[in-house]
Image (cartoon, rainbow, N blue to C red; front, side):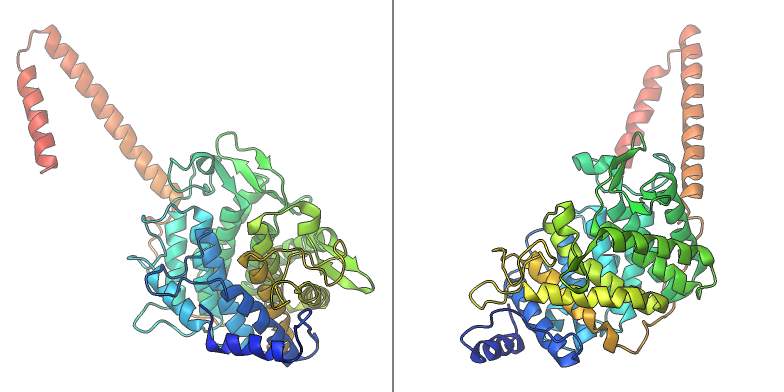
Length: 465
């Protein structure tokens, strides 16, 4: 359901002429960018009906991941533009799904770990940009921490000596057998954000741990600075080398947070950030006529609905990198601005001639719409156009304190695993001794086995009472 403000924006642009042939944007004028972003977000929310009576708030009907990412993009849009039109929809969804344990986890949904992380990142964005808190609700960073603790409870040291599987439930077929970059890069990213926000070494240690595991398994190839898509959880070998913009964004932005959290004094985080940035500059951007490089990715590497969203989200990731590591702005900002212009130029579809597509680079003719009308393309355009307002932002991201009492034993998978292995050994030992005892009693003609069985049955009955 669209707001009155959005309807006014759409009406105003139609009144300027019979139709607006594309979204025009002067990248050096703040108000021009805001107006362009308002059109893009209007188109995004035109198909959003989840705030109607009887609907599930935040549910866009595609995936739980997309729902969480939409909230993240809308929070970013508010931060960059100051437009509060979408805030009621965000508030409703973020509150409705926060969960009984304030961790955005619910057994009512067949969710994957990357779905879950998307909501954690939305909450973390809200914390960092001082998005208004839900009345009488927990702080945003509390919700983000809840997601983090839920995630690390599924850290699996037995398979591949670490990492989190894509699937949460064992019956999620293929997802249960892969450990991918969307999840583990996303968890690294969230740990790094929390490390910077809280100043806690607990989160910093986890960020380092996830990075090291990613590098050892070649999920993250630090020789070539390439983020592979997934490793198989059984054979621990790279299963897919597909270079997703979303996956690169998780590791790049997470690395920038660690660079910032260490005040730039740890040279390894700068080396890592520089390596990843050089890789994406060379592989995911292309010249469009005489302008600086434009983010393409989609045209060169194939795509699906997730990648369509990831393109704009990746551009926003780079915008935040310039805040965390200001020395990167000289390389990132021209590319970000060119990408925003490229995205806006392609917004010429639909009845209002402003629907956007995902082809921003030279591989598509200028101002030609590809017929796409889905929310994914509109979300991506909203994200990249809004993010280009980063040059007008003077304040830094906020920090705070942790709202959790850290239990190093409870949340250290090494200790937890050792604990359960000790108990497993103890149970096996008792079982072996019981079988030996039972065998000896049988040899010596004991007749109390029936009594023992009755005792066991009684114990079972009591247990289920």
